[in-house]
Length: 466
Ligand SMILES: *Cc1c(COP(=O)(O)O)cnc(C)c1O
Image (tube, rainbow, N blue to C red; front, side, top):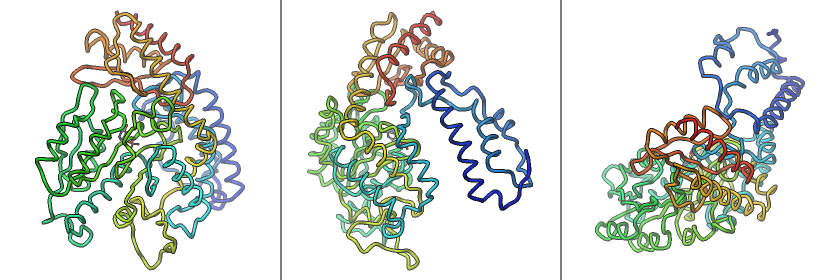
């Protein structure tokens, strides 16, 4: 690698050259994703050896740095944007969102203050409003890194509010000595709910048993709420990570509100069911909750990272997340500054790619996207059920399909064989005491042809382990 001057590392010409290389590499990557073997081929150690372990002493030309990065990291990239990728819950990338995300970096706006970086705040605000309309919810919207932070944000606002209702000022007095909060969740809540509780000092959740699909039992929730008293927060789920199931919102929210509890819905991928034509009814009643967390980097296919926290009680969110300082510019409008809605003060304008994705799809396109994901999951489940020796363990109501072979050992081997071939990708898990191979249909590019190719790959994998 050649040396250069410090000034060359920061000039506009260097930026233009580096961006050109990045553009070329990005287009090349996107073109090759569908045909590429899905798993990463290189390990971390090997990749680091190619990157070079030692920090160079002298400045290097930015374009050459990008070339070196592309060369070294390329073999370690996983083709999670493939239409035959169903691992964990990972969305692909819509072109408009990807390009907008690049501009967010190029513009380098600090999106915290409403009256300072007005351009990106305007776009984020509109994205937030559109999101609320599409998802059928109402409140202030904060753009977080993911649903983990969105859950934390919403539950922090909830904590402020339920303590305030009990006559306890959390900001003033802290948690110690205050009224205990009953923090209640379903047995199959996502782990990020426990993380939020840990960070917020809420303690381990009181777990309510779930039914065969992983939905919280409304009768048991009602009984638990009736038996206790004092401040309470209930976490419901839109989209179980294994079954895709949705809690019975109408019943659960009625019971929780009767007990004066705040209801939060973790809908990292499932909240989007509200925007589909065929899946809308799964979300019935969810609009009556007090807060909702979702992701844009999953179902909406916006690049990482982008989560969304929506809180109906704007004042509690602002009281929880807002910071006042003489050196900041505070808005004079009734709308909160963006930094009053999320834990961060400085952050990238990650809502702008959401605006671009929604503007590009239009409301009909969003409905098409959700319908297609739902239809592809049903198609996949039907195909799997027709394969000898394989069964689908869950009721496929949305985008998740849990597959099992005759024994746990065979199920694990099936997953290993599928991933080793690399044409299609699903991740292994355990659900209700059984090994499962989880398919999460989360990519806008997954169509009938991709599902058929995946079924063929699964057939080959099953034959290989017999
Ligand atoms: C993915 C997921 C989360 C966590 O979201 P991140 O974007 O990874 O932070 C929380 N809840 C559910 C149900 C999820 O699927």
